[in-house]
Figure (cartoon, rainbow, N blue to C red):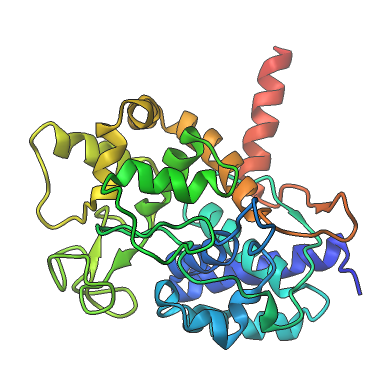
Length: 310
C-alpha cells in the first residue's frame, strides 16, 4: 500500500510533535543518517531502506543507542502503517532539522523497506571520529586503513556514497545538534559539561555547541574561533571536525558557512535530501513530494511576495 500525500503530512505532524515533546532531534537525525550512510554506490548495497530496524544492523558498533530511536518512532508507525519505515526514519530526521530551526529539506517519499536482515550491509562503512580510521569502503570496510588522514577518511566514506567535498562539510554542520558520551564512544574528554549537566534527557555528554538542540551555523563559528586560538574547553572538537578548517578544499566551504548562515542552510538542505535518498528505491519511481507545512515560513513567503509587487 502506497501512502498518500495526506498520510505523509499527518505523519510529519506527529514527528514534529515527538521532537518537541521529547527533545529527541539529535538521535532521530543520527538514526536516519546511519540507515542511509552505509550505502556503497560501487556495490549497490546499503542505503535508506530501513534495514537499521533489524537487530543484525542495530548490533553494529556505530549504531549503539539507536534502538531507542527506533522505539521512539514505533508509535508513529503504528498510527501510520501505510508509511514505510524507510520513509518514517528519513522524515523524522528532516522534521528534526526543521523543528529545531534549520531549513526545510526538499524531501520526497515512497521509499520501499528492506524485507529482511539479508539487506544489512557489511559493518564498517560509517565514519570514525578518531584514528585509527577504518577503511570504510571496498570489500573490507571494517579493516583499519594505513592512511591516518582524517580528510582522506571522510572522503572515503562520503565519496563512496556519491557525495562531494561541499556536501561533506555541509552535512558535518549537523553536529550543531546533539552530544557524544565518553562511556559510549570514548571520544569526549569529559563525561559532562556546563552545557549538558542538566539535560534535557539523560544528563551528561559533550556537545559541539552550547545550544545543542538548536540548528544553526554555530558549529562552524566555534570551530573557527578554536582555530584562531579561542577554544571552549567544554565543547567537543574531534579531528574529523577540525580538519574542516585545516584541509584547503574543505576550508573553502567551512569558512563560507561560518560567515553566511543562509548559504549553509541552502547547501545543507540539498545535501541532507541527497543523503536521504542514497540506496533508496521509490514507489512511485518519481517519489511523492509534500507542500511546505511550516505556517511561519508561509507567512514570510507571503510578505516577500507582496514586497516584490511594490
